[in-house]
Structures are given as structure tokens and as C-alpha cells.
Amino acid sequence: MFGTREEVRVSFAGKTSLVVGGTAGLGFEIARKLVELQSRVVIMGRQREKGEAAASTLGDDVHFIECDVGDSRSVGDAFDALAERHELHFAVNNAGVTGPHRPIRGTDPRDWDRLIQVNCSGPFYCLRREIELIRRTTGGAIVNVSSCAGRLAIPHQAAYVAGKAALNLLTQVAAIENATDHDGGFAVRVNAIAPGPILGGMNTAERLAANPEGTKRKIDVTAMKRFARPEEVVDSIIYLLGPGAAYVTGAILDVDGGYHAGKF
Image 1 (tube, rainbow, N blue to C red):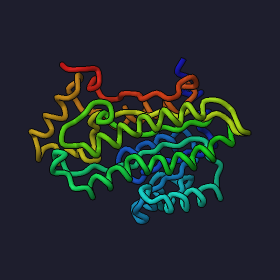
Image 2: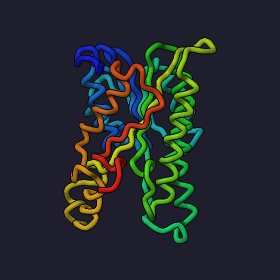
Image 3: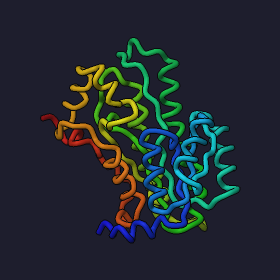
């Protein structure tokens, strides 16, 4: 049902995968796994120096393209550059930002605009171009990285919650629109994952130790009472991209240690 390890490897070998927001943290680990599966990998990010260093670390078959996902013109230029060099088979939209934890009445509209622009409009800009390119070949797939915050409301995070909830439904609209071959192009599967708290990134050992109360709150929202390891989230993304998920589209896969299952 899920495909053997060799079937998964073969499905990525020699094909091009894009990781938007792939220069650090979870995105970097996604790119690393795709390289391990013998995919050509393109990573996109805002910071050229960091992106070029990440690409160099990942290997010779990794290409960095500078891109600010919150800027539609930047996204357009980045995908034009991608299309000049590669066919595209798979994409992961991982770029995202968080903001200050404040009640709605105290939220600065500028923070709201920034989070909605990056976390919702950004994936929309990318999806437009990804679908255009991926539907030229068979077996393509896209995964959007959402959040458990898009599944259940979290107080003091209105902009983040709203952006991720919108991303979930955007994912499902894209899935429906591209579920079959049509208009001279091939079907593209589109899914999302909704992770809970993940080690690394904003949750480094130093930051967790410096804020024990915040760390306990993050752990307590999960039924499993622990953070996810990055590789656990990456494996879920690879599953949705790969042959084992051939009949899966429009899914929002909870990778959250039981957070969305309910109260406990």
C-alpha cells in the first residue's frame, strides 16, 4: 500500500523536486531527504548567502534560487528561472513566519498583513506556477506545510491561525481542480501536512531550556507528550509525494502527536 523503500527511491530518482523555504530548519531536512532519494533539488529562500551555503552543503545536484514568497513578482521571477533549467515533478511549500502572541484587540494590522501575505498568499503564488509546470509530466505532487494551528483555534495567534486555516482550504481547492488529466495537462496531487511542535527551528534546546513554561505548554497540547523529531515530519511529506499516496489528494495530514484528536 505504501510502496517499498526501493519503489519510493525510484519514484524520485532523476526527477526535480522544489522545496520553497528549503534553506534551513524543516525545509533543509526535507531537501536533504530528497537528495538521499536521488532527486535533483531546487531550494528557494529569501537570503542568498544562506541559500547558497545550504545548497553547497546538500550537494552538487542542488540549486538555490532567491525568492521572497510574499512578493508575487519575486515568485514569478524565481519560477521563470526554475523553468529555464528544469522540468518540475514535485514541490513542497514550506516557507512561513510567525508573529507576536497578542489578542486580536492588540494585534498590529502590519503583523496581520505580513503573516497572511507570507503564510497564505505566498503558497498561492507558488501553487499557480508549480501546477503550471508539474502538470506537464505524469505522477506529480505538491505538499503544503500547514500547521496544527490551522486545524484548531489557538488564542493570541489570530493571523497565524487564519493564514494556516486558509492554506488548508486552498490546498483542497487545488486538489479538486487538478485531480484528473485535463486541458492538455496531467493530474497533480495536492495535499498538506499539519504538524504540531517540532524540535529544531524555533524549538532549539537552548530556547526550550530558557522558557520551561512555554516548553511545557507545547508538550501538553500533544497526546503523545513530546515534540516531533524533524525526520518524522519529513517522512510524512515524502509519503504524500510518493507512490504510496497515489490515491490521496486534498488530504490535510495531522502530524501532531494527537493534538487534533481532541482534549486529553
